[in-house]
Image (cartoon, rainbow, N blue to C red; front, side, top):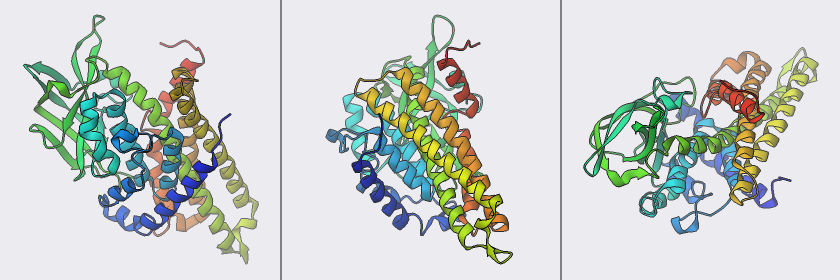
Length: 391
């Protein structure tokens, strides 16, 4: 059965120390200024965070997926934006290249990505292709030995930083025999003519995360920038999203844990009617419920991560991981949203003030139920996994 080893817990302590030293003192100002701390990325690279699941030949640690989830949880406990920077940097940036790239593509991009000298992004979502990702309208056609890409993408994380080196973009490259879109994945280096990174979004939360829309206007890249086989893009991103859902679940656990710790500390020290508010069952019962949610979310998350590692070792099926990922993502993200509501209520009026971190937690939480597949999509995946009929 799955469990976190002593090595995992020792690693957790290292990442927690890093997050509290390098992120916690600055995060309120970064959030207020909507500043992406590009100088932090190489430090995360030096700690080995971007290379946890990458083979040693490309500078990685050749470790397990569970370790990545531990790192994401601990960063997310201090700030969600920094947690998603790692989650997207590995799961959506590095992972597609590592899993489907040619040896030349891996050698070109992975060493810098692992070291934190560069970031990569994954361009899937469009204004009319979110949950219905198969409705992609971005198109790519072969013109001699080049792909010509036209279209746009929305809400792309890590896509416009000063060190973003490449974006993997899904595009229609033709039609399948049944009339559905043939979708392929293509690597587009930053700075390519015709590739425009739009202004950053002004978001409800995740103020420190880098997020942009992308435009492609007769953008040309070499034919060898195709990632994997032509027409395999749809299958590729579905697999990528399965892993990403576990990572987002870990991010949600970090947020719920932060809410629990903040609520306990505040309930012990906030005095009302001459006594700490934690003696009141109206407060203590809510915090008790929060503790249960944290434990349940963490258990579901690390079960899914363990199954992912077991799949890598050939002992579990893709179906096992897909179901567990959806279950973990659904429960943990909805629990995190509830956790921020509870924490804000415990803090009362102070919870509505930006001077207290629970206000930032509250703003950051909602996107967890949307990104990497909405809660509705997770329920659909779970229902299908149970053998229920689908439309």
